[in-house]
Image (cartoon, rainbow, N blue to C red; front, side, top):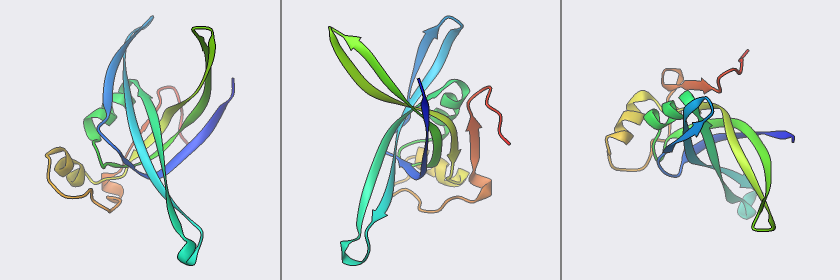
Length: 146
């Protein structure tokens, strides 16, 4: 089964990171799910329209724990992951679905913005990228980065 690389840039989280624990042969593993929304513009002039794309991503292990600790609704992220076709039988019917699994995630908010959001400071999410000091990168274990 082939995987397809998916990149979602300049996205904001639609809600909090949801965490659960999955029992595997190797022990208990942390699984997190988040929904990231990114906007693109299509057309030009008066015909220009904004289109939103929402993707539900799954994170595993330490990466899931870091996301749950640092991200919340409105957090600004870049996500790189893989899309996998998921086909299975259920009650005699063939079910088709898609799974989006995070390989790399960049936390783009500054630490101050993230802490203010988690503290419940009112207002809309910050619009800046946070700069290099606010950038965090996590990778899937076993994957090397150049």
